[in-house]
Image (cartoon, rainbow, N blue to C red):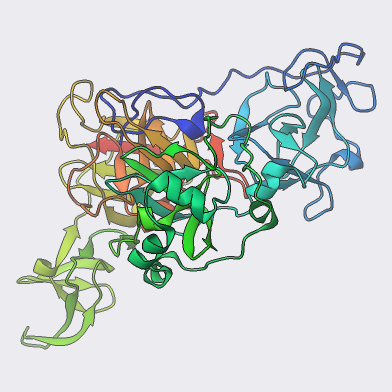
Length: 515
């Protein structure tokens, strides 16, 4: 995908499937040295967060880089916590928002913090806390020390980072689902959906959906109370009529924190804090396609039918001995006998049963041989192959789907932009939207998004299985398994509990896209 219509803030960025590429991720702000005036008298009652006058909690300024008193330092696993209650809760380099943004938290994230705030500012009168592992967060509209805050309670299930799909996902059917803002009664469901509740249950019984949804959990207190679900700060606020706020868009996808049975019907609690009937959506099944680690190139990626392992006798006659699973990745020695390639474990595999990824014939000019090997990613548009390197050694290979525009002009087509870039920002998940005039869609919480240039990103795609063929509108689509691996391998790392991170000072892994 490639960015579509501009949407405010990183977590609500446009996707890759727009008519034009845009970079809706905020640019890293210029570094501003932070220091506090000697007096705290400028702190006012204007809520929020901002620079203005700043003073330490004890009334004296903390110099940048100065050691903090023990009660202001976060203790890992300690009793002092801070909860994010916004779509994005920014973590800043210093205790005011004129310092660079290091990254952000998603509503529901809970971090260790210092016992006392480090400083107060005019728009953050309750104070800035140092959080683990680094940075400062304002106790205000976006974060709180009150772990019983309604938003903190409602966003109770964190994403399963490292899993191919960090949430459970679904896509809208031809008739999109209703978005319920509280637990609806059977009568309220009937009025909204124009179908008898008993008929709906009979048409799609719970037993049919259980194999696809996994764990079904009891209603937590915030749902069982019947109250309208709270909204994180910065979330879209819609008018609701009775128990719902209308239908989702026809090209929507949803991510669910949890699944609950309500009056004989399964509902997913979405990351937008809406209840969605699972019999009105198409649940996403994880694809079997994947790549994998290698011990340098050449390497082979098995096709969907798997492959046969052969041994070769002294006369060069192959003999079948065992099988390889579909999409297995094998490191090859480079030796061949007819159609067979030798694997480093001694097996011989037919080239007809795998995609052979051969070593490069040359290296990009940015690759330096002095110093430690640098991580970089090589994406071939012609081959639809991604290779992750450490210096000149390949460590991971997989199929990808780049832009449908092929080698066309990215400004005029849906081609992937070519060149050498570096990762600018990383997001555990982010919502992607298309332009209404071109492709009106909204995909909730696309996993493992890594922006490397304007609106171009590496990210997981759970809505197709055409990996190895162009399919996107400019981004580099990966299978969820591969995207999860790559997200943890690339720089900058995303600290535990954070939802996204900004790259500063050229620290992002290089992404090299070429024909």
